[in-house]
Length: 290
Image (cartoon, rainbow, N blue to C red):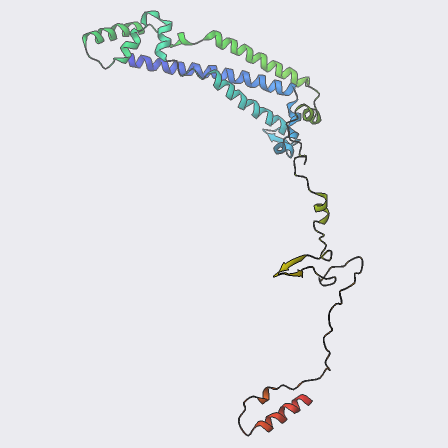
């Protein structure tokens, strides 16, 4: 029998068996985790999570069945955690070589099978005799000897027991009497949406926001040694209605009043064509009279 083909056949069988072990472990861990979440009423803690708060209490129709949003979240969480734990349990499976397992099951092939496989391309009397002896020995090896029946049977028993336990708990509605308030007290690290962590505002700042007094104390700046008042006097802004009337500053000189009458322009004294000064002057005087 070809040694290379023999090793490949054993590797294929081992991969299939390992997938079976992984599936059993995953289903068992998944069922137990979901059962534990149901008993502890983990679904009551979901409204405390801001991302789930809006969808809490909704139902989804899947294949004619109405499934609550909380149930979907628990199933997904159980599946993810089961995948992680299953991966951790079987992380060393690929590190064990097929040849090492064969040699463990058949001590007569120890070191011989490994040496023959590593020197399969070598052509000499010693290598050829070793390959011939190993080929004759591996003809009796069957992949089924690597199938761990006890492990599979134990996994099936635990899985069936887990399913029955989950069915019993679900049918009898057995769970802890937990409410979102209980979980909030039990898990102080869960955000409750409070604003305790927000920076405090000064009371004076809050009172003046949006209602700034534009007619209060004057804002004074110094420009080239002279104090300049930048405040707005009462009544200067459109739309401001003060509750109490304030006295206006009258420390200014009133401008001289003029009679409401037209004042003739002096521009006609500028350079005009000679001989037309009298005509232009009379024209502007008539315009002013009108």
